[in-house]
Amino acid sequence: MRILTDCPEKIGELAAAGAAWTRADLVSLSSKERALWQALGSGASLRSGEAADEAAARFWSRLIVVASAPASQFTVINELVRGGLSLPGPVACLALQGQDFRGQRGRTWAALPGNLHLTVAVEPGGFPARQSVALTMLPAVAVVDGIRALAGPNIRAQIKWVNDILIEGRKVAGVLTSTQVLGERITHFVMGIGMNVACSPEIPLTPFVPAVGSLAEAGVHASLTEVLLRLLSCLADWWSRLQQDGPNALFSAYRTHSLVIGRKVCIWDEPAGEGEPGESLPPPRVCGTVRDIGPDLCLYLEGRDLPVSRGRLALAEHVPAP
Image 1 (cartoon, helix red, strand yellow):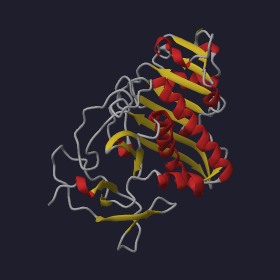
Image 2 (cartoon, one colour):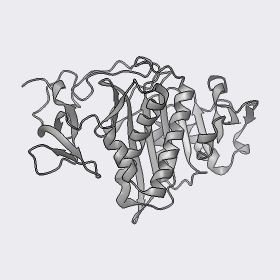
Image 3 (tube, helix red, strand yellow):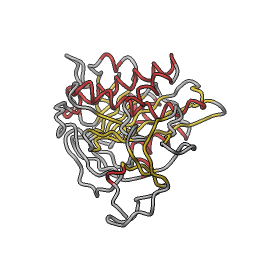
Image 4 (cartoon, one colour):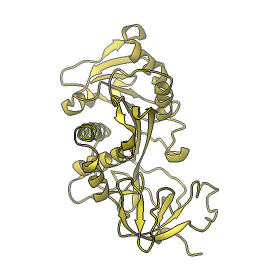
């Protein structure tokens, strides 16, 4: 895995043992690398190197690391691939901090130093569009697996439907995905992952996000580099398993990691909760105890025949009484 960065002094652990960072310029890059760096790089001095982690390096072709991103890398990568850019292989992009980062439905995500802000892009080679829901599950399951591998058995990360990752009721990560479809095949798959590694951002709390936390505050004492490499390995592993064996194992893992099965929840239509802090919510569209989750990620509630396929979910215990 080749690394392109403007901040080698901040990511020394990523370099292979005995390897040196090499000064690079745009002329020395391939056309695909040049397009990526010009869109994502800061314009500062460019260095290249080889990654130390063999498990991640076997899958990812490039890792681009910038000290500060002026805009959401998830948005930039999506615009590039939709504009016709062919990738040099699976690509991962890390911003140590940045501006105008966004989560699901364009919600603001605070990009603080010490936390992980990762975007990855893959050309799936004709992955069937009918299985696109598996791509929604993949980054969430990979994040949980990565946290559990770093934390050990005493710290339990779970998935709050659809794509929030919580530890002990505190949101520590969120994921989002985007696909480009041609006919019945997915031609590009982009994942965005934000994870609070070192610190928790100060954000307005709502029934949907009643508390925030970080890996450090939960007792997971891992460096940003350790978290990154573990997560890249988990993403690569699940992608390979999905292509080889189909979505059943991925869905089983998503269901096992679910926070909401057996819990009473309330669900609103989007974009509920997007008003001013403290503004009261309208009545939820539906409330009930989650009996199960289907392979299409629909929720099945006790006493309700029709599944719930969309909306914004809060645990009922966090919803103020009317």
